[in-house]
Amino acid sequence: MEANELQWYVVRAVSGQEKKVKANLESELIKAKLTDYVPQILIPMEKVYQIKNGKKNRQGKKLFPWLYSHSS
Image (cartoon, rainbow, N blue to C red):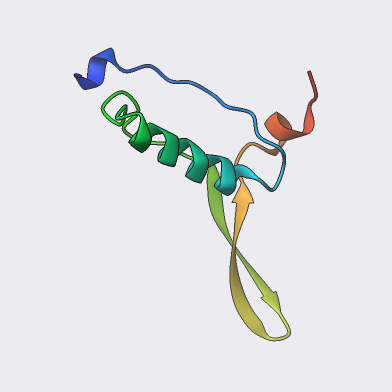
């Protein structure tokens, strides 16, 4: 499948379960042999550095927190 034929989709997941949902989606795509149709699954995160107890820690922060906070 060509890159210009691919479409974007958004999956809402329970807060804190994004990595688990991604892993489950990837394993199901492999089982169903559909990896050509979904070449990449992204979790929108940004790297944030915080200093705690004198040590610099790298953490992931949700890139679109407003997207996760609204209920439908």
